[in-house]
Image (cartoon, helix red, strand yellow):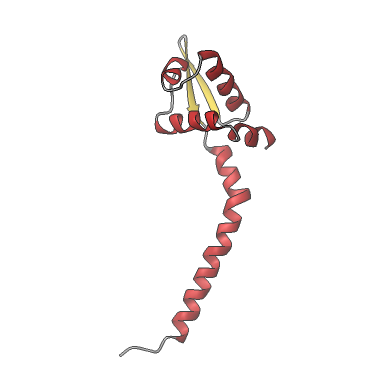
Length: 107
């Protein structure tokens, strides 16, 4: 989990994830064209994203294709965000039911 949060903490890595979200399965060359940094810098960021399991790679011949792996972000959602949202939804549902019971019957 620490590697995941470290990877997401950097704006450049989040930008790479956004690029892969829009068009997954890109080569390093394709990704570099969309970034304002050296190829070596993009490679370092991609390696950290791979270590955090946010990016997976598939070799296609001599090309290495980079794909977004949304599963770790889903885990963050379930563990850190979803449980808080669930309470809000339940509270709104309870409020709706209470308001429905107190409303006068319409003819």
